[in-house]
Length: 301
Ligand code: ADP
Ligand code: ZN
Image (cartoon, rainbow, N blue to C red; front, side, top):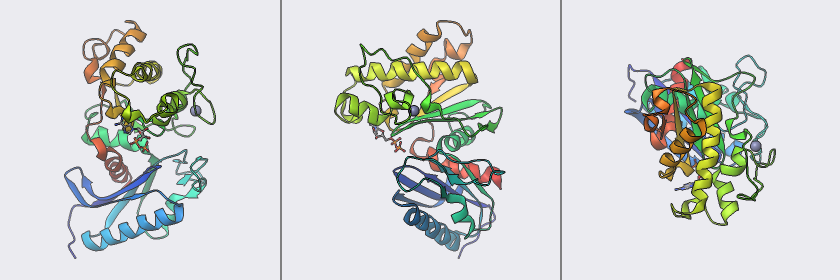
């Protein structure tokens, strides 16, 4: 058994389709990693606990655990339901006491936040938002979610932001698709998530060529959302991740539309001549989620 002097942290990226767990202290220092599909809470949490126990046996004590999870969830340590996934529509997962399950086996500090607040924190520490104190991370995938850091603190309040569910303007003549959000119909997620693109056009988003009209519409919706976030939260940078943003041709389209939409109202260089450094992909790529969870653990230790 090898024990080291650098403290080790565990990160759990709890996604709707897969879990990624890692033990380490940063991007260049990952000692163990595991990925498995998200099935029932019992089975998935049992695999998570097994991974943590094995990693601890192999690499030494874990100083803290960070969980970056799909939600909605309760991130407030003062609340009786802290650490629970709350009202999620994901079958079987509503009201799951995630942190409780970890705490029964591991007597260390445990941080619990949204996947996107975690990813924002990780990008702030090691990635595309280094050196900034106020920035957003938006994921456009199976769902749409936004998180961020404001003046150095993860964005919380009443609960946590739900940026995917803001209202947008939809022109029914151009886009008759009514949206698929079970709560709001044509909110941002209802119109612009991967499954929304697939339902609207009748084929998976990844199979639509770059010149398909789907992408101009997608860029319009995302630009509308970013206009709102820029005007409400005044972020110094916006990171766009998630499966749909693998369509990298979306970036220049979104940037141009954000500029057109703001119409010169905010006279700051990042929005005018440096917009390609303002709306950016994640620097940590596929690892943003699990590294974010490790960053959460470090913050709580
Ligand atoms: P999740 O949101 O489940 O955590 P992702 O961020 O990878 O995971 O999002 C998955 C969704 O992103 C898929 O349902 C699909 O709609 C969309 N997607 C995945 N890859 C691509 C791609 N290359 N181009 C466009 N859309 C994609
Ligand atoms: Zn909604």
